[in-house]
Length: 274
Image (tube, rainbow, N blue to C red; front, top):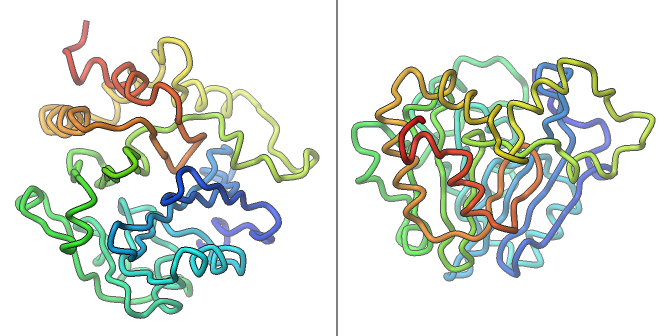
């Protein structure tokens, strides 16, 4: 399975960008269902303590390792922000054995059942559960720098984080921002997937452009229908945070009008469906 998630030449196609002096993104191409170019993204954050946290780890290339070293090299936290974004956790845990693994309930059990060679059996130091999500501590220095919310009402069991010093919201599948322009920017033009009907339809459901009607409907009728009350509660709490940038795993980073875009996308969950 993981062979489908790993570019054959990650060093050649990865985009490494300093979003702030303390926040770095690693953007790579990725095809959802093997057909839809949604892209993938890992995020590296330097905490006020000097320790480093990695969210949604991607391929650990020499360039990524060099970037980690340039920020001090002290990887203390490896975060899988949902039950899908975890494939490279084992590679990073092997390279940085002192790191604490963090993830949502259900993920450790899922990994133990997998037979993929890239997925190890590492123990998680922190596992968020729905029953105790507001009482969970990741670590003293982590807790000091971050707000976090476990969106257990989401099917993928989303963990959303706010890095308070730089006002950066880090999330996986809570919202996309397609098309994935940056994530495919280093892919040769001839190798980029062709935008057929399915691709255009999926991008329409996950675009923040205009009134974002497709995404609003998708979130309301599909993503949140199982527990809309719980989903609304999580979204409302996240919206109470002070952020100016949103880093999604899929699609471009939002570094302009991020709060307004979040409120537009989740309007029905914040104010009620009109």
